[in-house]
Amino acid sequence: MKIVRKILRALFFPLIAALLLFEEWGWEPLAAAFGRLARLALWAALERKIARLSPRWAVLVFGVPMLALLPVKLLALYLFGKGQATLGLVLLLSAKIGGTAVLARLFQLTQPALLQLRWFAWWYPRWKKWKDGVLEQVHNSAVWRAGQQLRRSVKSWWAGLRD
Image (cartoon, rainbow, N blue to C red; front, side):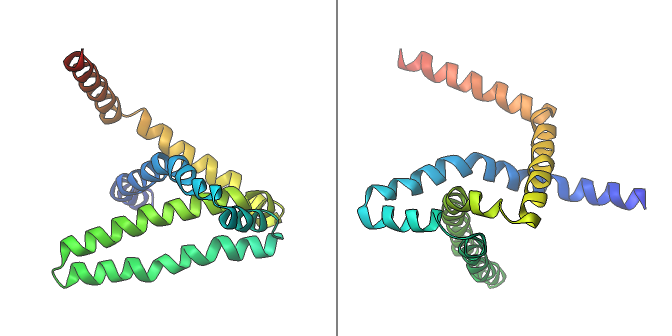
């Protein structure tokens, strides 16, 4: 059983790590970008209503957009299968970026209500600890450190060009 677990981990860890890195990279900036819509009076009123929802309604408001993205992602897979790789990729990336922006903002608005639910209050810290552990493994990897060094070198080189 341990060998199967090791094989599955080796196969899925890079994919899971990539998804978590994207979420981590995009979560805050996309939520902030989406939150700028609150400058509009109507949007700000809607966000205030969402932030005051009861825990049960908060689950619905947070969960429905997440489920609504599933058919879009399935359509992207269908397009891949029909040889429309570019269109499928554009659709998939758009759904991922747009979905992350919406879900991140909704989570910011509904988190206090969601944490009032016993099951969510139990689940969320465990999820966060697991996710942070995966990201820590990634950040400690040689590939990540090499990528960070390359990024610093390119940044330094670029700054030298502009001076």
